[in-house]
Image (cartoon, rainbow, N blue to C red):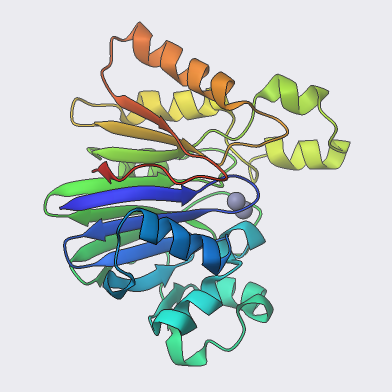
Length: 258
Ligand SMILES: [Zn+2]
Ligand SMILES: [Zn+2]
């Protein structure tokens, strides 16, 4: 068994569950602890299998309840040293649970292999992830301004991909944000647009890629229907049978078999 559910995703908070039979991992904890418990109960995931919380970068929408989660379950809080420096004030007392990882260096949690790899984002030390178990692999690619050769090469032969489809470029430019914020989102250190998500997918698509979850949609600069249409139009054009799933800010996705 190797499954994932995006418990929540969007600019107001991100949280992803990954599980094998015996090991559960929470990637980012940008929603309240209460919402994490509700989602896990709803999915019938026992809290006792959660063995670690792993943080991608220091932004509030990824770290909000990370300290509380580690303390509550008495599990390692896996984070890079630089990320910790930038968000320690938000995590509370986590000294007993603090474990550093380095971007580019793989580690195991239970029977799941985690490979954190560098992403381009306006954070101290941000990364994306590839996770492997039992010859299946999952990519988690969010909060990046553009994708690199490293992104593409690390995502080769993955079976399920959780991919940022943050904004529609026209909605962003026509929208209410201040010019400097628009520039930030659009920049190499910002977020992937719907079209960039398609661009990345074209680089990593292969017959073994079964599920694609679009995530981190902006509520202001995107519509779920639009992000879905842009990706779905591409998938239809190549007659792909990939299962396309939309992550949501307020509801968890179903458990997806990776
Ligand atoms: Zn984010
Ligand atoms: Zn971010």
